[in-house]
Picture 1 (cartoon, rainbow, N blue to C red):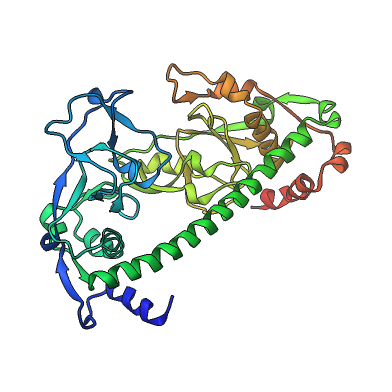
Picture 2: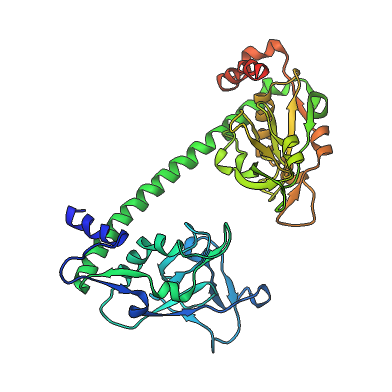
Length: 387
């Protein structure tokens, strides 16, 4: 992109003097906004016309709900229409889109944008509005998480409007660069998925080996203590950094899964995790229940919620090794088959099930055989004992 085009883009981000032929225009002067209809779960069907929800705008892989009734008096969206989500989570939900997935009906919290004039290109409108979203989000109402803006606030948002030929020229450049970015992101995502698969394959190799089949086993209840975990509470008197099941993975503890929450102060003191604890996803979807990670000590103020089971290994078993053993159980579908619960979407493991499960406990003579990945972690156990 040339310096001139970069300068043009900068105009979208902040209110400055525009080049000749450009002007600032409020969205209400350019277009009308038609809000979608409120569709309740009882209105949903497995056939009919797709209902566009915010999740369908942000992720094409998300499934549709359908409307099987008459389209009369419905807000109908056709191919090429512009949609503007004005409610949800700032940073992920808000934004303008060009609809490219056929005739549909529109759910509430999304505007269909109907242009009043012919001097604006759809792609320019989308780019310009999305670069101005920060100004719109600053006006959003509601608490942390779900927020919204009013129609008059959307109408008062200003965007720069160059001549139509200039809109199309800049939009074409942006589309070309966005396409290149998407290709790079897809390539990176593919490499990341391949990297994530390596630990799983490695664990299967270790614990399916002939040597591993000879290791003695013991009940988890014999080699680990179970520590308390408590539920979060909206009226709790302490703000905490809560460990969610998104923190647990075969590649280790993921601090990106932590979330701010509230808990009773007494409970939070009991639930603060310490280095060397092995955490198990007690309740989750069938595909994720039983996932495991060992907490290595950061952040120090993290607490465990009742969605996890906390294990503190004794000297009979090394934390890293226990986490690897239990990750192998998870990867082999062990807990998916054994977790209880009537719901098809959420399954649960009990503390008793964990205590009764048997894990290998290799003798000291066996440690020399361990692959380097586990061996290096084995000797690091002394670091945790000192903490």
